[in-house]
Every structure is written in C-alpha cells, then in structure tokens.
Amino acid sequence: MNSGNVLSTSYGKEDKIRPNVNDLLHFYKTKITSDPYLLTYNLLVFSLLPSELFGRLLYFCTMLNLRQLFLLNNAQTSPAPRLLEIERAEGIFLYDPKGKAYMDLVSGFAVSNIGHRHPRVIKAIKDQVDRYMHVTVYGEFVQAPQVLFAEKLISVLPDNLNSVYFVNSGAEATEGAIKLAKRFTGRSRIISCYNAYHGSTNGALSVMGNEYYKQAYRPLLPDVHFMHFNQPEDLNLIDSDTACVILETIQGEAGIRVPGRAYLQALRQRCDETGALLILDEIQTGFGRTGKLFAFEHFGIVPDILLLAKGIGGGMPIGAFIANRTVMDSFKENPVLGHITTFGGHPVSCAAGLATLEAILDENMIDGIGKKEALFRDLLNHPSVREVRGMGLMLGIQLSTFEQVQSVSRYCATKGIIVDWFLNDDTTLHISPPLTITEKDIREACKIFIEAVEKAE
Ligand SMILES: Cc1ncc(COP(=O)(O)O)c(C=O)c1O
Image 1 (spheres, rainbow, N blue to C red):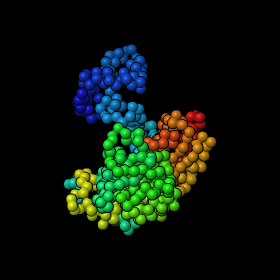
Image 2: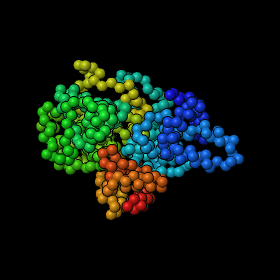
Image 3: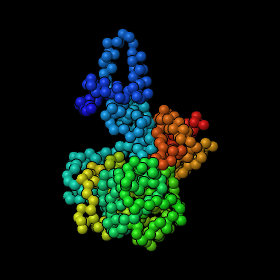
Image 4: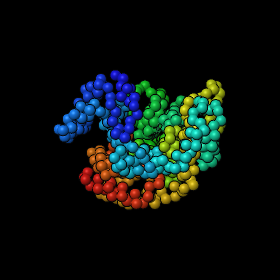
C-alpha cells in the first residue's frame, strides 16, 4: 500500500503528521498490534490523556510520530531497530528532540572521525554547493574538488599509491578493487578472511567471512577462498592463480582483531612471490582511527590497492580505491569504462573529504590518540571486562555473553552513551569515538560503561 501522502508535508516541531485513514488502519493492523513497543506506547498515550481532553483523543488517534512513520514507511533491516530519534549532532554528541545529549562512542560506525559537523567541513560543503553539485558521471569533466582531494590523498600515501578512483561507498570501493585486480592480473581466484566484512553488495558479500549473512544470496562470486586471519600457515592458499588477497588491516566487524607485524609482512611477501595483488581495506581503520593516518603504517607494509570510505568524507558519503597508475590504467581500454559510477566522487563529498583530511593534519588530531587509548584501557580495567582489543581509538571491549553486551549497550544509552556491537562477534562491544574526544569525555564515558558492566553481572 502506497502511503506516500502521509509524508506529503514536511514535519514540523511537533514531528506529528496527519496520515490518511487507510494508511492509519493499515499501520494499526500490521505494525502496532504486532509490535510490543508500539502497542505499549499507544496504550500509554490513550491512558494518560485526561478525560476532559477526550475531544482531542480522536485527533491523537490519527497522529503518527516519526518513529511510527519510520517503521511504517522506511525499509527495516532488523526486527528491533534502536529507534533513537536524532534532531541534531555536534562534535562528539548527538541530541534527541527533547535535547537529551548522547555521547557518540561509535562515530556512526567509524565515520565521524573528526566529530559531527566539523566547521571546516561545513564551510567546504557550503562553498561547493554555491558553485556546483553533480555535473556528470565520474571521470568525464575536470572537477576541482575531485582533483584537489586526490592530490592531497596521494601526497600522504606511499609513492606506489598514486591513482585514486572515487566511488560512493565502502562496498563500491571493494567491488571496484576486486574488478581491478581481476582485470590487471587476468586471474579470477580471490582470497579473503574468515570473519571479514567488506560491504553488503554481491561482490563484497562474496568476500565476507561469515556464512550466516551470505547463505540466502548464493550463488555469489565463484573462486573465492577463505583463510584464517593472522594465521601464517594459511598463506599458502595464495598461489599463482590468485588475482588478489583482500583483508582489513585490522579486522573490524570480527570484534577488532589486530594481526601481528610478522604475519602482515609474510602476507606481503607471499603476494609478491605469486603476483597476487594485496588489497587492504582501511575503510574503518583509515584517517587516523588507529593512531596513524593509515593502519598499514604500523606494520611496515604497503598494499597494491587501498580501500577507503567512511571517515574520509567527514560525514558525507564517499569511498575510494587507490592503486598504482599502471594497475589502474587497466580500466581504460579493452573494454573501456572498466568501472562506471554516476555519483562516485561527488564534488560536495570530495570538498568535504579534502576539508576532513586537512583538519586531521592541521589540527594534529592524531597526536594524542595513543594517550587516549591508554586512558580507555586503564579506565576499562575491570574483572568483567575480559579483554580490550584494538589500536588507537578502534577498540573492542570483550565481555562474556551477548546478554551482557545487550544490557551494557542499553544501560549506556539510557545514560546518554552510545556503544554498539559487531556483525561477527556478539560478545564484544564497539568503541570508536571521534578522534576529538577529550580526556574528560573519556572519563565520563568509562564511568558509565563500568556502571553498566556491573549492572549486567
Ligand atoms: C572494513 C569495512 N569494509 C567495508 C565496509 C562497507 O562500507 P559501506 O557500508 O560504506 O559500503 C565496512 C562497513 O562497515 C567496513 O567496516
């Protein structure tokens, strides 16, 4: 049933919109009666209304708030979304419509590395919007924001990574990189890691290392094989038929797993021996998250193709895969247009990206990360915290059960702290705050976190 007319007016301060009767009936039939949260909410609205306001009751009955409309009209990805309504965001805080502040310890899943609405990003976006937004498909016109952002990225990367292909997202960066590796090597074999996450599109899903999320979509890409992350003995799966090995420099959705330096160096060597391209996914780890601009810098290796997204846009959607020009040039001919994207490298996102990178560098955001990590580790030292894993401000807090994880996350939210869990590890909580978080914020957050852990015991 099309309920588009429900949203025909934009929502105002009251965030109440009057739907038509058919939409309302449909909503009540399909959603409210089957959803305990909504049922309780609506019963409360009815029971709390004073009797003299009975005349308004009918009016209330035909009103849906934004949460209800969200459940009614927006595609759902789980039976239990968080339903936290955000009115605005600033720095490390999100605010709900009542003005309650939530400290964002997840950065929108490692996106808001420089905090929400950084002034330099806002200015760059406004300046660019005043000039032009989308003008053509990627790769045809010369657009200053793309050129300047690519130039800046190349200036902070090792010499071999000198050609940038901008796309829309992390998943598209994964897709583009896999295609590029197949094109350049003429091979089809792909090696990925168990528990890896590289995105949710078909190709990216094919290299995801968790069968639970993939089984419903088979057949996926053929000739994809999996090795155990950080296990040198599995490196012999990489052979001279292998087009590429794709892995996260530090595994994120696996619950934050940091590999050994010797392992990554052996991986680099094996790729060199066999001619397989090494794709490092730095979509979560990039742009300062781990205490270096890129996590591979900790391990003394350089990839053949680097994947970036999330934090690089300062809150705007953008991704990139970056390789050597000789590799990237395989997209140019036979056939031409090796990868096509309409909105990839959107000028507004590129302007935001350049401002983000400049802010990280000019404001020395990376400098204090080691101290902030140490403070988190110190304050989270508790008998119920089994392990704190990670590097810099990419931390996984290992508890014992999923119930504990849920309970801690819920309690933290009631106290205004956002933490989250992982796709491929349900006993660990995710902490990746904006790099700008202060010592005072860390102390406050950890105090609540430990309170939550003790309540969950
Ligand atoms: C390591 C990694 N790669 C790829 C992706 C996919 O990025 P996107 O959601 O922008 O497609 C994610 C997203 O969480 C990620 O964490």
